[in-house]
Image (tube, rainbow, N blue to C red; front, side, top):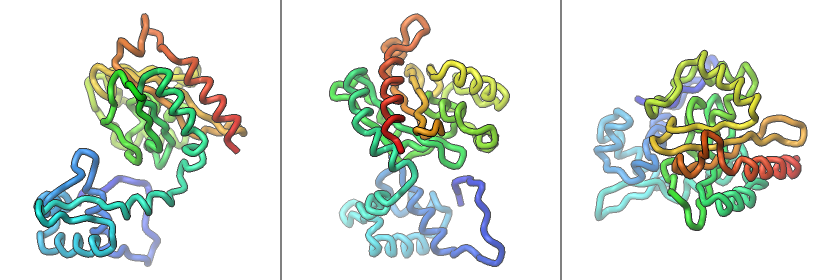
Length: 263
């Protein structure tokens, strides 16, 4: 069964609840690319027999976490998942404080704006704001999704400003090779992290989606501890001018304003 790799071990003498583990795997089988799936799709995704998958899904339907359309025979996550997600504490304060600034950035730059936090060696997208008239809609990454820290401006900024110990954990994870420009060599990523720290920002080109560039800056709290990162993305020629990023001043001002507001 496919599983998310995490550096978490079970406590000795405390076995996993197999049925619960399987039910969680079913919930994780849904994604922005596959929000509605058949019983056959889900059976293959979690590598269980069809009868077991059907019983688990029925339990999740009764619990209000999964919906089942009788007409199309498709399953999907229900709003019950959103109710649970609303209680997630990771990145909550940053998200609440940054929300109006993300909207201002999106409107000023006419680009999709992202808010990222570091979580277990990966970048977690905690917010995304589309501009009213975006130059391109970067709908390929959604709130709640996680990605390795080797590609994308926001994630690479996190890689640069987390502690050396956290960086090594991140570099031990599988590093996504999304495009030919994606960097997956740990030594090269360590050197890149040093340069990002020196510059104070990252301009990533073609390493997440071909033809797109992204600009990211770190966000710190009042104590100077890394809280997360902000990034914008668009077509490369709209974000880059003679190898220099546009809108860097807008992102830096927003990061400074957020820092002054964070506790």
